[in-house]
Length: 162
Image (cartoon, rainbow, N blue to C red; front, top):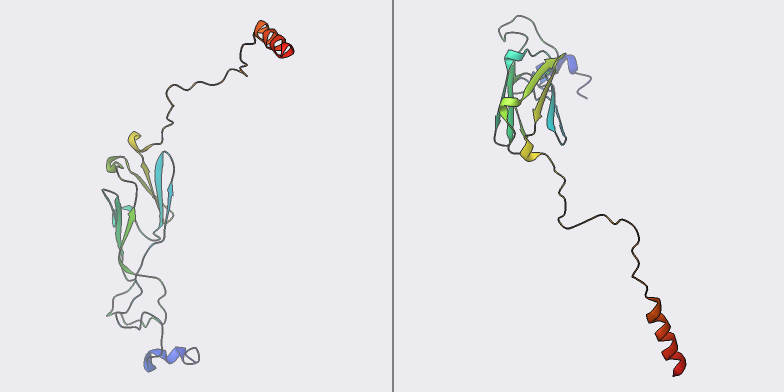
């Protein structure tokens, strides 16, 4: 039913469009992907329209915070009437849990084509290590017990005498 009245929805309060809802605008929350390897943690966020200076990245303990703000493309006093506003706007904060002990001084952050990529190398203490077991040795071949032919002959003779 709303689709029939969509051009007049703001007049009747029928719109589901966040521009006309109380509060006005859909919030912006960039999607994030996180990949963990033996050597590093990589975080990738879609932040279209952002320049590097508009983003703030902070690592505290095991919490990685990425903050920014996408401003509205118009002033509320503008004489234009926006019929639809589907993109999100406003301040955002993404908080991601990462392994403890990562070094914030070694984070590499790049932004290209609206994609923010963070590469956080793991310190040596967090990298997996192979543990050798003490006292173990690899078998060299099949070991057979020493065969004493004289003891075998004695057993045969004892069995025949009985």
